[in-house]
Image (cartoon, rainbow, N blue to C red; front, side):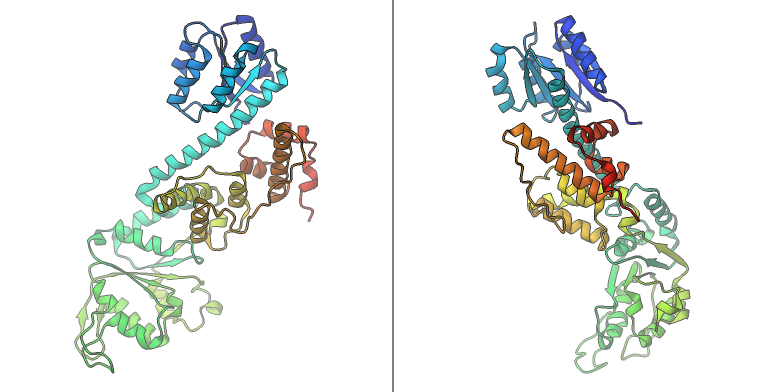
Length: 448
């Protein structure tokens, strides 16, 4: 059951304070009521997760002074001002200064409830974004392998457990899932961190070049070899050699690589000298090398020699709870790179994060975050502007809110939990909005 949204209410009129608190409690809020601003200030902090409702006319510290103090404490804290007729010009000025809303006396109970509900939902989004930023900062020791889901915590535990063992590792995972990140962490968390981390994409080099790149060559070993070259394997001695897309390695090179793994020695092209090497090999494949039908020309003995420890990286679609945290990290990194502010997490972006399949995994999410920071929001989720037909601003906002809810229901096929998570609102609030907008959730449920 979702916790009640908190509200701090300040009013020196005891009877009005009691009536207003009762109205908000009946609407589903948890109300803390105070007869003066001083007592309320002592209880409020930047961690307060709700909205503040305050009268303007009060002794000692009035509502506008309270608003100023709260704005200095936390500019994102929503403050709703209750005004008498003569206070309206002051309230309008306060709105321009950042107050969330003002409500003139006498007011209808529903007018107050709706304003507090919208303010609370806005505050909920602010607190969620702050929590994501904090979580991203706390995850610095395992960047960029970010994730708090059980499968990712288990993956990080395995990496820490085997990092210092020098065992060769085979990493399996889809394109963009972070295979090189895993290899880098194995290197950074091991005693080999002072040595070189050497990466080679086996699928990016032609067969005529890859052996020279791996094993090196002496001057005159072949046409064009004018001077001695140290190969990647020898350069990685004392450190870690990462072989990406190893399934693309030519057959002849596979035979020589098997000898390197077994003997820990190399013979560069153009010489008979054998040179010992001290290295750990981390190989990555985007196919299942353990399946003979998929393995193709990849040598079985090389597969078993690499398969001392196999680490599988789950695709992003199987750890969707990590997506907001990853997005927050990538957006922060992109903002620093492009010298932009991190934009608020809009409903359009939230829908895309929650409903997209992410076939490109973490790499695709990183690029999407960059586009969001640059203001190029979309990435396959371009949302056409709503053609609101209401004549007044409140009517247009109501239409826009209804459209957002319908989009979220559609993206989640009517699933309540998924829709609530996408919207970032409480369950009770969700059902209240369905009733107010006349939306039938059942019509969005996929029929199979």
